[in-house]
Amino acid sequence: MPRRPSFEAPAQKTGHVGEPVTVELKGGGGTGYVWEPQAPLPETVKLDKEFVVPDPEHGMGGMGKEKLTFSFAQPGHYELAFGFVSPSGDQIVENAILRFEIE
Amino acid sequence: MDADRINQLIKVMGARWEAKDTPLSKARIAPGAMKYMGLALSPGEISKEVKLAERTEPRAVSLQPPPPKVDWRNNGGNFVTPIKNQHECGACVAFATCAVLESRARIAQNAPQMNIDLSEAHLFACGCGNCCETGWVNSKALDFARRKGIGAEIDYPYNTMRSEGCKPINSIVKVRAYAAIETLNVRKKVVAAKGPVSASMEVYEDFLSYGRGVYQHVTGSLIGYHAVCVVGYDDTDESWIVKNSWGREWGDAGFFRIAYGQCGIDTRFAFYDADLVGIGTATRARTRKPSREKELEHA
Image (cartoon, rainbow over all chains, first blue to last red; front, side, top):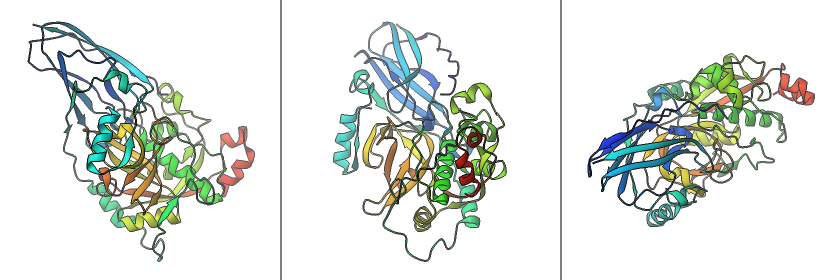
């Protein structure tokens, strides 16, 4: 397996109840790897996923970006664990803890 | 994505495939908690492929109509080499290209048991460079295979690619010529008469949950573009039979079927045909299987 690229976890994000907070992570593109929560999200947290896909004219299999936009129904400190998961779902090759301070 | 939800949509839409849960997906994703949206940058037309096809598409592979079904996994023997895994590197082009050339070598020798394992790392790292994040282009991979050839996996294993970069090794196969193919009928004729070809497609989220059957996109966003190796087709269910590079655990033991025209496979991207010429400098063959070197010399 190729060496894993280093991954810098995003810094803590701040926001307000009901407002969207977006975190951008590298994408998996044609590798089929995607970011998934490692445990069911709390009921007070909603997540919208968007994929930024590179133009195929520049290359098949390009990774692109994943944009995770959260909204929180309650204030507080949140730590959400995400994994970069293989398409067969049997491997997590990277982990990211996303931290939010919501007022 | 939740396989139950996808299977409900498949039923509603009358699609002919079945989603399966992955070992982790069911446990982690709370239904309703995640909403999937797409943000695909509008891709440009693949004009280069069209132009290449106009120049190179074989005009007379056969005057006969193509047979209704071909599967090179069972076509007087299994001419398709084992499923591999590209892992989290955008090297699908190298995997698709090597898969095509491995099969073509077996077919050329009429030797379905031929032990040939080409080095995707050699092709990808020396042909494209440090391209895991950007991906590559099918025609460029074939052009590298034509100019430089591709060495053996044993001489440059994929799991050492990130640390070794481009490692020059002796080539064991070379491409004599390649061609882009646009039209459906010619695609089938080439697959039937000559063997597997490389192709490209759009990948949507529901494709990750593919289990079996004839895939068509029913839900989820576009997540990327992917190169694959078409190993056959079946007119009865109007599908291509495809070898993926996501490991044996994914899909139908690493393979899938996709309906004609789905995910841009026939409408946006060319298929690539390649003619092989063997060269006899395989260190792999010297070290382990001397009899194979002769087979490849004459491929």
